[in-house]
Image (cartoon, rainbow, N blue to C red; front, side, top):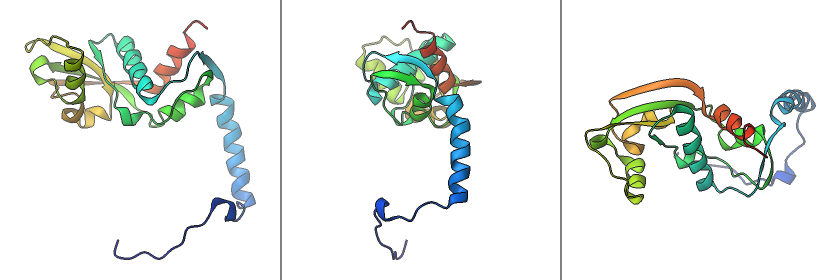
Length: 173
């Protein structure tokens, strides 16, 4: 950008939306609401972004029966508050339509944030063992940053968001 000419406008000072556009938005919101504003569970406490990262890791690990689950912190885009959980809550947390990918990684090739976590947990890594890591397709687009150097990637086409929604729905209230 070489130059910029503009001004800050308060949201309250914006003109009202075009009635035709607002009618379309309202029509689509009604259709979406019918699908995502359904109660799927109850949160006994509020969850921070870090709490949700751990939950996502646990859920995708459990779903895929892998050695580890890894989810990138910045992939969690909202919090979950105590009380009713709707599918929309999970859509707001994971809006990207990520799907689960399984990485096969020899212990000697583990790296990134996953290795830092395992070291903090004092996990004993066998350099010759091939570990399986459930993660998402974003992470495996740049694996060395997050999990290390995989020798194999398996795309499951399983939705992370739907997996979490199913998990919550199957919890006892």
